[in-house]
Structures are given as structure tokens and as C-alpha cells.
Length: 351
Ligand SMILES: Cc1ncc(C[n+]2csc(CCOP(=O)(O)OP(=O)(O)O)c2C)c(N)n1
Ligand code: SF4
Ligand SMILES: [Mg+2]
Image (cartoon, rainbow, N blue to C red; front, side):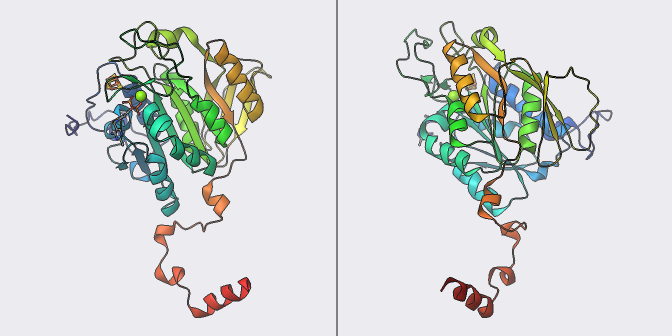
């Protein structure tokens, strides 16, 4: 049951981060998902990333739609703000919340059904507007919550548990995010926490729309032979293009890499992304080349993972709209209604 909370008692020697919290302070209620569901591993990665980044839980707003994946915000960051929207509507609620209060860290968690079917339009506009958020799709190729129908990301020819083949072309969310202007685009696998945690950390520190497609097997309905979203299939076809080391602004860069193997990207807040290149022909800062690269590899049946694209000089919706630095929900009546003289001046400037 989702209402079962975890005991609050901590072992006194649990390690604390720089803001005085243990990893347990970033957990949520006890998960009710199927044992082995990929989504639980993603929740664990989010917890780890926020703990390591010393984020104060009250500074995070987590939003989701409907689905097993969209239930997961109940299982992490139990001390943060949360909004479980209706099916496919997470992006518009996140956009509104972000416009009202730019001071929070926004984390949208959704499913392939939630974002690639009913919510596809919302996803598209959230990406193209550059809403400053981390947008995670927990992609299992099925509607897990409603018992395993193919979703729009199921590969053509892949088979359902009963052996029925999917005849429709898949919708590639990475390709869409790139096309729509997302400025941080990554793919990972729920079974690869080492890769996923730094990708989430980099996305949190990124300014603008940061999209992470995480292949997350559904053990109940899509983990059989013939599925292209099963643990076994993804392990066999996973081609990591790079490994990301996320370095916070205050950290010293100590790792030593051979020249030519590393791409360093500085983000707005001073944090650094160090990408150890595994695929020599992959340049993560050239959007058009990345779009081609991902398509070429997909044709070969590879599931490319890693930080696929990043735009170092990214902007976000607030910058594009030139809003004030003060969160809009903190503006007082005096600032919102500056009086007749100011109104006259504005009217005069428009005549
Ligand atoms: C308006 C509306 N239509 C349909 C549904 C039924 N429904 C609930 S969850 C879901 C799909 C969830 O799939 P996904 O987002 O992939 O999440 P998963 O369970 O696979 O993690 C559907 C179709 C609904 N709740 N609301
Ligand atoms: S039905 Fe699938 S997606 Fe839902 S909890 Fe179970 S394994 Fe996870
Ligand atoms: Mg799904």
C-alpha cells in the first residue's frame, strides 16, 4: 500500500551530507511496485543523486502523471513538494509551477505511455519551451499499470508476453527531444546505476529542459524473449557512447584522463561535465550529428546510452521570457500594481 511509510529511526552512524541529511532522509514511502521493477532502481538513483548533490529536500518539486512510473515520486524524496497530475499532463503543470516559482528544482517523472501517447503534445511543448526541469521517462515499452498493452515506444516486431508482434513504428523520445530543442538529452538503463546517477546530477544542474530516457524493464509484462525492453535484451545491446563524471562547482578536478578521450563541458552554475568518450565518432555538442548518430545506431539494433547531447550555453523559459529574478509567486501587490504613473508610462510607450 502506498500509504505505508518507512520507520523514521536512523542508525546514528549513517553518513550525512554537507547539509546534514542521511541518504534515508531522501527516501519516500515503501514501494508497492512489483519486485524487480526497473522503476524502483530509478527511484534509488534519484535519491542517491539528490543526497550526493547536498540538495535540501524542500527545494525540490516532483511531478508526475499516471502509471506505475508516475507513482514512483511517492517512493523518493518524501520531504519534497509533489504533484501527481492526471494522465499525460505533468509537463503543463510543471511549466506553470516553474513559471510561478523559479527557485525550486523541478523533477518530472513519467512513463512511455504517459509521455509518448496521451501526453505527447505536452512533452513536445515542454521541451521546445526549455522549461528548466529534469524530465525522466521510465521507458518499459508497455502500459504497466493497465496490464501490459504495447506503448508507443515498443519496437516494431517486438513481441508481447503472449507472442503477438507489434506492427506499429516506435516513437523515439530521444530523437523527438533533440528535434524539439531539449538542451540536455541522455539515455540510460535502470540496471546501470553507475551511469544513471551522474546523468541525473548533470541534469539537475543543467539550465533548461533536461531529458533522460531510462529503459526500465517491466518484469510483469515485458521482460520475456521477443521484447526489446527486457533486462536481457538491453544488457546485450547497450552501447554506452560515453561515461559521465559530474563535478560540482566547489569540487577540485582530480581525475587524470588521456587527452582526446575526454570532453569537458562547463555548465552555467560552474559545475563540470567530464565525458569519457567510448565512441570516437560521437560529438555530444553537435545536435545534427547526434540526431544522425542515434538513428544510425538504432538501425543496427543498438540501444545507445550516455549523455547523447548537451548544449553548454543553454537558456531556459525564464530567460527567453525575460522574467524578473524574483520568483513570481513572491512579488507583492506593490510590485504587481505599481500605480497609475507607471501604467501611463507603459501605455505611452505603446502608442
Ligand atoms: C485519461 C486517461 N486515460 C487512460 C488512463 C488509463 N491508464 C492509466 S496508466 C496508463 C498507461 C501508463 O503507462 P506508462 O506511462 O508507460 O506507465 P507504466 O505503468 O508503464 O510505468 C493508462 C493508459 C487514465 N488513467 N487516464
Ligand atoms: S506492472 Fe510492470 S511497470 Fe508496473 S510495477 Fe509491475 S513491473 Fe513495474
Ligand atoms: Mg510504460
